[in-house]
Length: 126
Image: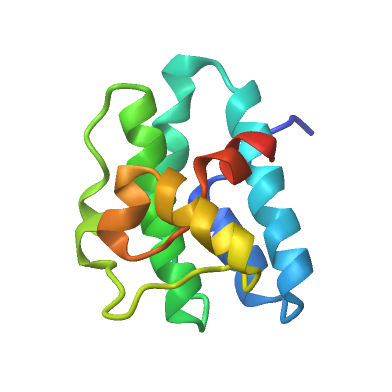
């Protein structure tokens, strides 16, 4: 048995099986941790396969925003499947007013484009 880093498609499977939002976020942070430990030349492959629907459009769009954001960090084009994942109404994952303001200021461009307002500080802290 050998170790394989989680893909975004694998993350989607974890998110769809879990109803507890706190645990869903733990899966996102785990994906980011594994992604960062992968050699740079292998990272883009973790984003390519289109994730299956999670049952919640917000999470589906977050996965698209995350793929686009991470692809840009390794100087790659975003996967084609990310283009259609956009929210009509912006989503602020945090209900805390201070976190919402932080997200308005610090959300990466890919997240804004998709309608997800999550601070880059939250992504780095993962």
